[in-house]
Length: 452
Image 1 (cartoon, helix red, strand yellow):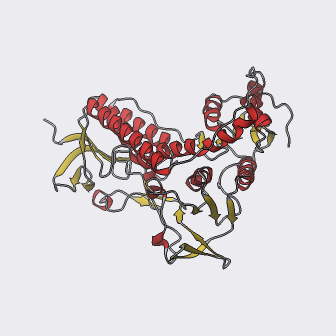
Image 2 (image 1 turned 45 degrees about the vertical axis):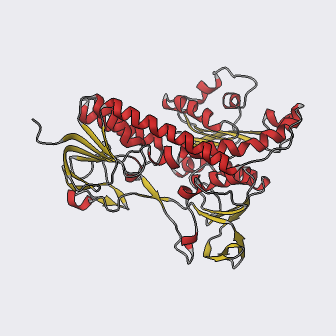
Image 3 (image 1 turned 90 degrees about the horizontal axis):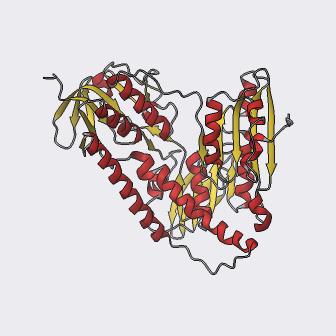
């Protein structure tokens, strides 16, 4: 008889926690998982999945408009926000049901409650106060939205959490921030017909992405009618009879129906009882080693709560690696060295590896191959949009160390570019790859002369 109630207790039912629980159970471990909100976590319930559904919805006006160039006569269209939100909610409920069913089939016991650490091998269930002992504990509580800067009236603003459940579509919305979430929601609301302002304190949106891609998206957003206010911050929000009056740092005042704060997310560690178990926190996140082990040997942490690479697929890999290593006798760690990523703006962004600026800053001698062109779809539709394809190549080794795309289906393309770069493809490998014509992706294998 084991001295512990379970072999593994998982705190958090998001992507990383669920994957770890299922894999550990598959290795024969007795697993209990606690989730205080809904199984599926941020990504499934109020993150990337519902966001992508809204992105799809926001792109239909382009399709209706483009159809005329191809001989179609499309009648009057009308968008209904409540219908979209209801359909989104139905799909999210279905996905949550699948997550629960898969955990049940794996033999994982689900506890619908908040859980806190009582020690290195003990967890307290908030709902009934009982203490469960565990040989190993995994913290996978993700990150939470923030309302920053903390200016007067910030309580009137919403975050991405509330944006998914608005009862009505805002006619005028201010989105504050310059990262993934801000950029994507600005595109969503603009596509659905809202008048959108995107305010960001920096000179350019999407810090960390390639400069040519950032500039290309800024141009595209302005062309789509999004009011980009760069090097701008807000100083206060006041509720008035006509809406939310926002005062900007330059003294300008504008009125909006909603103000959405998307300035970042913070590791969700408050009230977890980390100090009771000796878990060290650094920079607001749980400190872990490459194997996701915390300062307490019996406790691991994966996903956004560690603030390493805050992406769903990364959390899943980390959770899988933990479960295989601890319970399956298969030691491996999730690599954070090369992570393909996409921004579901319109147009879309796919990014992988070194940006041109980062490569040069690290002293690499690189050649830059780039193609900017009007996509074939736009030749008949008349849409004024540009696609950008860019390769960063290390001269000494000929390795392709960066791929950056702005345009339709960039997310799909960058996934397969990820395979190539993971296999250490060279520019010569790209060059000898047969092109698929006519496609946008063929540009990646037909660029011959460096632009710089």
